[in-house]
Image 1 (cartoon, each protein chain N blue to C red):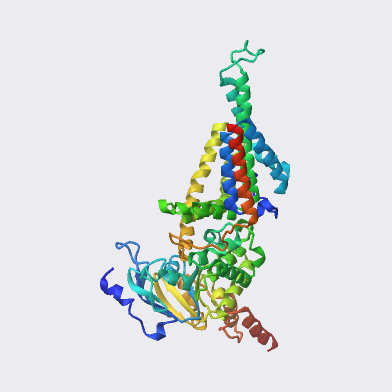
Image 2 (cartoon, rainbow over the protein chains, first blue to last red):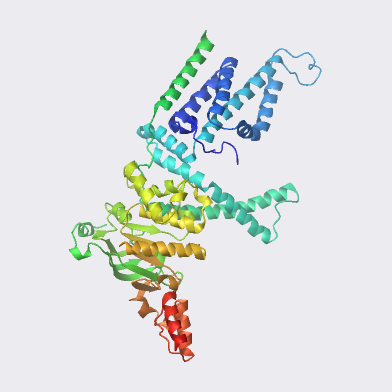
Length: 261
Length: 293
């Protein structure tokens, strides 16, 4: 699992308030999806400049994109083959028509998705899960008026993340136990391998339910109850955070300028 | 709940009850049709005492200790923690702050994504100020010797270390009594030793320890041992008295500390040794004497 994994560091981006970082990614995502070429180019330049500032190696970025490669190709082909417009000369003899518009749309959409993933990766690579969750919790706090329990949501996310490695270990253990009794996960027809994967699922779910029960008891014993609680780290905005907010406002302004004038 | 019951825990009990845990006629049934899991248990646990709770599997040890901080409520009878009834929903949070609980499985009691975040969970639930939480997290991690692991994610720790983090998480709530429900069951010998060492240190600082186990060696240092069988406390005695009843303990599916067993064997072979020896240190002294004679 390398997609957007946290890379500890001391850069200015690492130290930004997680709320500001999450907010920025939301703003950038909207701009990316709404904008056309000029906006995409601006944001690309911005993100490329941000990578060295956040002290993340470019190959980490590349690694974040790699699992999505298939998706990008698919997205590109979809637009290339199914967009109406002016056909590109060498291709009309084929069954499918490839158009200039399709080529443009395909390239544009793929570019947009690459930018989305890059901006989200910069967030998750420079923000520890703990900070990320506390950022989400604080951003959701105003929604309390709508009876959205931000504390409980934060706890849920944090427990889910905390137990991912535990579950991976558990799967290995169950797998080994079944292999010791002759199960075969590696060879044979696909159907059989899928079936044997299903046989992992039942014990895994049962174990998880027992874990959940014990964890709930332990949480109750430590005084957990619904409603508000306090945290060791309260977030506070410093100058760099306000600068980041201003940068985001400028980016939005630039987008409007580029689209309307 | 009847009105009379509600009144009864409003009434201030006599001052001598104020620092102890008092269990009065505790009976607990999951299902009215079935046999009670706990049957008429009445005990007092003095503040600062070290109590061992022993008994074979399924005798109700866990069910019993889960009553001490209101995780389970008595079907009949009462549990009082420093004069507060666990049935009173208004004081249950206070009781859970005062009575810390450490569970058997180290994995399933860690909530946080990092060690320090997990330790801050309890004080956070008590709604303490961030500065106070930070102080408590540091101090309690220091006390269990896990300070340098503060930033580590829990899955990188050994079971013993996880259990130390769980104890730190309880300590951060500033409890006066700590219940440990088979805390060493999942640990290797070195992990076990570290936990027992921390338990002894905490007890010396005046924290009440209620230690559930079926390893007799672990509770040899206790002030008092509760022997449980079929939902009842069948014996409350000092370890020395309990471990004299070798045959009876065996009938209950329990043993005696290994060094005590050794002394009995020597005695049966006609050697003149004391049999009230429960710790390795005492055994060394006794064997030393034997060799010298």
